[in-house]
Length: 58
Image (cartoon, rainbow, N blue to C red; front, side, top):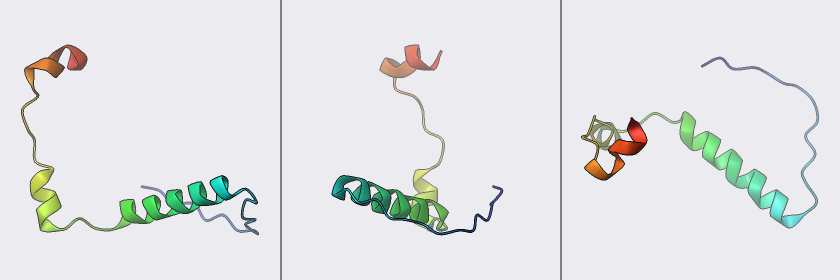
């Protein structure tokens, strides 16, 4: 994944809902960048698709 460095001044939103949304988005981005542990890698193994979802796949 390519990373771009953007420099400048960040202004936080004034509205409380926007502020919490930006905070949650930042936390999610940090969570996505962290390495997975062994338990998460085991959970990510390929699994069979349930029959009910086959129509969505094909």
